[in-house]
Structures are given as structure tokens and as C-alpha cells.
Length: 187
Image (cartoon, rainbow, N blue to C red; front, top):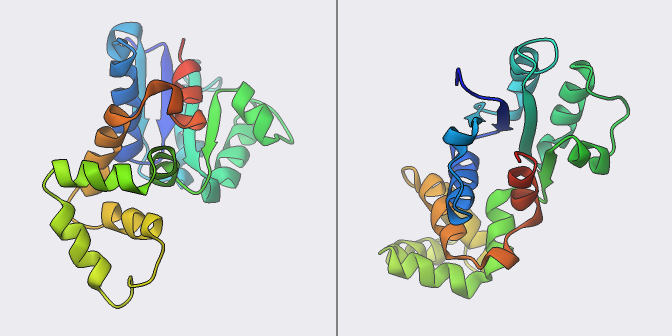
């Protein structure tokens, strides 16, 4: 962190792993480039991290990624940090902060398509566990994309693992825009 020139602020560890996996796919070594991806432990911590690393703190370049339901937390944090006022989503993106429609898992599932995600689960030895979830009364009849989101969010660290798996298996030209946008903001 001492050598960082840019800090990418993300809500959680799965977001961090996805960005790092995408950087690796592009042949980038973020650490060597002075880019640190920090999982904040939730969007509500954005203000504290902006104070520490932004213009009133260490003055580092900033970028970030959040879920749509956390967009207002990020917007308010950016405004309080003095980076802009009355920010639109497009203005947030110009600052290097991108919003996932719903969340990153949803973005990746849509980019892949449900059948592709199921093939990845099968290759990772998780398809039977997914089929078990589908049989649960609460999940029967639900769209398979919703079942996959729930599946990734359940089980020890599955969400973290699948963030990397899905990024690694997706064609680069099909990568979700928020993910490529935040990585591009670190150049």
C-alpha cells in the first residue's frame, strides 16, 4: 500500500478478486503499477476511505466499484470528499467510479448466460450443490439467474471464488462495462 499511486475502492472481497482476475487477463500487474484494490467491508465505509486516500488524505488517484443499491452511498461520499457536487452516474464514471446494475454477480451471470455459469459450476464440481439449491421449495420456479445468484452467495467463500472463475471464463469483449471501466480508470 505504501507504493500505491491509485486506490480502487470496492465493497467486498469478491469485487477485489474480480478486478484482479481481469487485470491478470490483460497481463497487468496492479501491484507493480502502483494500484491497490481495497475491499472496504461495505459501501458505508466509503467516506472513511475517501478521507484517508483522497484529496484530503494521501491525495492518491481514486476509482471504485459498487452495487446499484449502494450508489447513493458512493455519490454522497464522493461529494463530501470534495471531488464534485450533484453527481450523476456519468459524472461518477468520469471520476473512475462505476455502478453495477444490481451487483457484480448479476453483471457476470448476464454476460455469461445461465447455461455457461452452470457449465462453470459443473467444471468446479459444484453443479450437484446447485441442483440441491434448485430443489429447495423457496427456489423452485425461480429464474435460474436468481438461483445462481443465491447459489454464489451461499456456502463458504463461494461468491469470492466465483468472481474469479466467471471473469476468467468470459471473453474479454463480453466483460461487464462497470468491471472494465473501473480497471481502465487505473491506467
